[in-house]
Image (tube, rainbow over all chains, first blue to last red; front, side, top):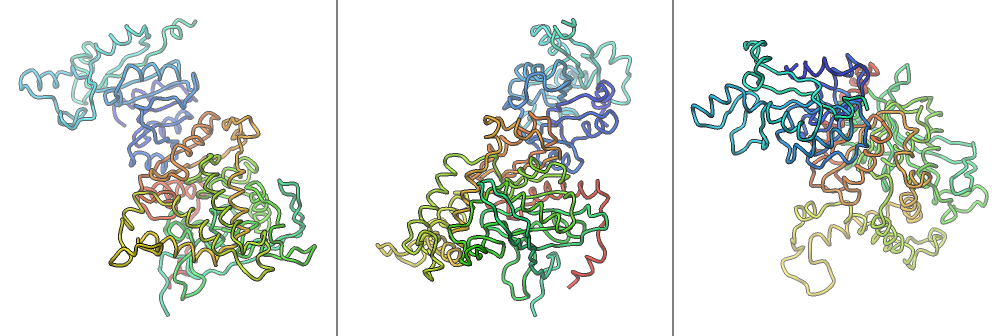
Length: 203
Length: 393
């Protein structure tokens, strides 16, 4: 399983009702259903991803995330997860509002644009970074809103959201300690667990 | 002797089940006794756990797959999706498909004899609804010894029957497949149906539905009804690609004979239908479509209406279907989500309009067979060797 997915897998409570936005081929939801009795739905637009979900028995709804989540009621889920999709949305900030309307808590992962290799790529070579987590050229990339650990934390501050947990997805050969100490520099994938402020303070 | 395709269920023979238990209909009338004509494909396993019921659309019937004779030009109406190795794999599943009550292909309907009068039922045949069909299908299941279907599958009007099954008999199906359907008709849908009915009813050969006794048929009205219907089943693109503005002959005739290929096609389809389908049945079935609205009993709240459903759903729509567009399927999907049901939804990109549900389309087949394969896996269904051998023509 991808490194960000295995972190999420550990974070999801037993028996939760989960909405997975951009669920891909359903790997995460399938594992969560098997290991933790999780139920819920995945939303996806990629035809192959949808077919894989259906074959796995993962509930998948063909839906464009940019159209919002109006078909999900307030507080209808325990947790909304979005892995590696935030950067491809037209308005990530509005989606964050939607996610925290549907559930009190959400888990978000995205490629950290401030990752040192990206910095080197842009800073020294002067080209837009192309990497495993950002595999597209600048002109055909679906990733239209790239951000960093620091950017996302600033957004959460502006929205008065509580960051409950933060982790990094890293390459196997890079030190865990380094990325824990300086996630914005050494973290390849940013992983955040956030909730509404009132939820965190137990109001 | 021409060879039948290896991936077909081969030669099939319709069967008839007779029922003497009176059936109380939603309209308040009772059918004292009735016949249902059905076909089966594949083999019912010892556990009786591998049965799949196919619910047919407006003009479909029991002949869903295979051929009635070696010289049959066309196989059953859903042959693309039913057969060895197909989406509904008859090596694993036992498939049941029937002609609904009120139909005109052998099941009791307007062209059958009313036992009380000795006369044809004709227009006196009681109005049947989707619920009535489902109730009669339950009796057919009992007759075949099927307690619970592995899946009930249907497109268009057939999809409505599937939905009704999940509400009326939730314990009797393990999975539901609703394709190119809607939880209720729109005003536009009803309007098209009304045009079709008026075309039939205003035919001077209709005789208030007693045409058989006048030894005639409202051919012209039925032809018009079918032509209107046919236009709504295709997409603009599909029609454009198929016919464009192609002329039938080299020159325009500056009259009202056929100029364009599309006119010729519609007339041909209408003519063929007008002699093969019963006008009273067409009237009944379009009304059954119009009446279907499970949310009506819940102040229009479909999420409340679907509360009884227990099984996982697969809902499929087609991008160019304007008869029952994807938004109508999404209404059902959203209600199922609101009600916390297990549901998957795919909108298939297809140029074929509403008719796409009958056609081969790789993504549609992947989604459909993916869902059916998982059911087979969950039930531990193994391919039936004997079945394979039987179809090695």
